[in-house]
Each structure stands twice: as structure tokens, then as C-alpha cells.
Length: 155
Length: 155
DNA sequence: CTAATGTGGGTGACGTGTCAACCACTTGGT
DNA sequence: ACCAAGTGGTTGACACGTCACCCACATTAG
Image (cartoon, rainbow over all chains, first blue to last red; front, side, top):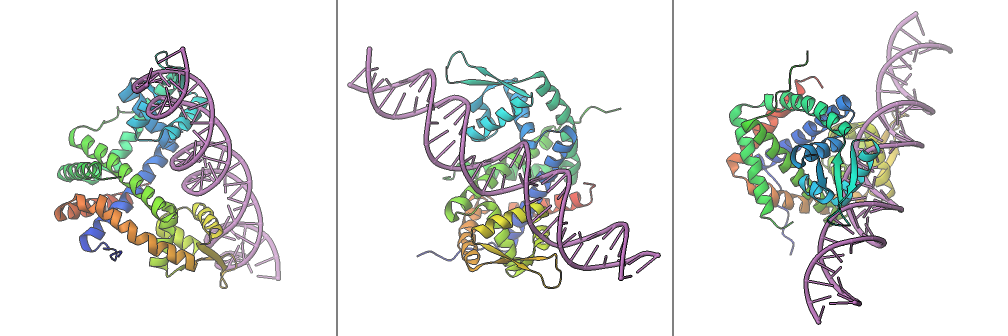
């Protein structure tokens, strides 16, 4: 019987609209910065950052994909491209004939170290500096809350 | 002389990490929903929503692009694809020989009306319902604050 | 009127994301 | 030992986004 949609109103609508616009503008600007001052795409950055900071520079492809919440085929394509550009390499896994280790090359390490420092300055400038400590705290809790809520929710 | 990067710490880091993860997961899930229950991509949705709700179903290409904060070439490509699928059509502008009006077709209207109702239910389920009214209000203000801050900031 | 410059919009090439199918290897049951 | 089912990973086709460049028309200066 298809009840009519419950459109957003008042604070609901304000929160959603502002959040969406803010997030789009912020992410867009940050990825253009990564691109223009390190020559890497935002995806390159995410992959290298995850691999080196949380995987010690060497990880199985699926583990890396889960870490950054990507699909395996996306990761596979991305690794192929980054390998061609010398940032990563693939190695066979001795324990599991199907497996592939993804390894950050020296050039990969260099690139991420360069980029990370610049990136954090942009994050500060555009995001952290815009908010008071208590607003930062509030946003941390709100984001956490939404994440938990989503995990408890079907798809 | 290249001061060392001021890495994020404590609440700064928590706010940023949680925000990024939340936003990625939320946007990802919502666009998969739009896709699977209306057959449209998230981009199709944005274009049709902007065009019909705020442009009366008929707008110049550049105006539409500005409205949703896209580059003109992206919009042009997108309109081309949507035109092929019957959701939009192009019309010449009599006042300006270079101009192009983008018009939502009846099929376009139908599609967006169908999709919008379902979309808002997902937004409620995944986002609005996760937060208290005061958290929604806080997020609205925080987002607004970041937006204003970015506008006052060079690039 | 005409030439320079600006603006609205399109195009093609290339990097990226998704989906579905596929291959090779592993695992578990019999 | 063997076969079914599962898992790790790759591939190809196609939709999408960006960049640089292009073209047609408009505007302004002279």
C-alpha cells in the first residue's frame, strides 16, 4: 500500500543538506590537493597510506581491500595501475598458491611520506581549524554513532 | 624551511578518522541503493533532482552544473549519456546561439519521482534515525561552519 | 565594421569504479 | 582418492570523471 514518502523537514533537512554539501566540497578539495601537490590520485594515497601505516608495507590483496573498504576487483585494478607506475609490486604467497602479496616499493614509501605531510596540513587548514575543540568532539561522536547505527542495520 | 608536519592527535584525529569512515560508508550505501532500486546512478539522481526541483525541469547547462557544483565537461558528458537513455533532452537556446537548454523528459520526471521517495526513506533509516534531534542540529551547524570556513579560504 | 577576447558548450583520451564472469587453488565431505 | 563447493585474485566490458583542447557565437574596443 506504499505509504507516501516522509520527506525531510526542518532540522532534519538542514542537517542532511549541509552535511552533503560540506562533505562533497571538502573531499573534492582535498583530493585535488593530493593530486596537484604529489601527483598521486586520492586512491593512490589511500592505498599507500593503508599499506604502509597499518600493514607494514606488505599485505594480502583482500586484507588491504577490507582495510580500506573497497571491493577486491577495484583493488586489483588499482594495484595493477600502481605497479605500472612503480609504487607497488606483487609477490606470490608461498602458503597459498592463489594468494598475492602487495608490497610498497621504495618509491611508494617516498611518495606517501611526501604526500602525507602535505595532506595533513590541508586537513588542518580546511577542516580542523574551522571547528572548536568541542565541535570536533561532537563530530567524532556523531560520526561514530552513525557508523554503529549502520552496522546494526541490514544493508 | 619546511617545518615538520603537525600530525593530527587526540580528538582531532578521532574526529577526522570517524568522519571520513562514516561519510564513505554512508555515501557508498546510499548510492548503491539508488542504483539498485531505481536503476539510476547517483549522478543521474543528482542531475534530475536539481533540474526538476530547483530548475523547473529546464535549465541552461552551465547553470545546472553550478547548481550541483560540477564541472561543465562532466555535466556535458552526463547529459549526453542521460539523453541516450531518454531521461533528458537538449534544446537550442534562441537568445544565445551557443547555449543549450537541458530539459527533463516525462520519463525523467517519472524516474526522479519514483527514486526520490525511496531515497529519502534510506536517508532516514541510515542517517536521521541514528541521531537525536540535538545531534542533528549540532551536525547542521558544524557542517555550515566548515562550509563557511572553506569559502573564506584560498582554494 | 572588424579584430581581439571572452564565454557556452562539446570532444577525445585517459585514469578510475563496478559488475559479472572466470581461473586456479584450497578445503571439506564421502 | 576424488569431487563439490568455497575462496583469492584477475580480467573485460562498460559507465563515469578529468583534463586539455577545440569550436561557435557573443561582446567589446577601436
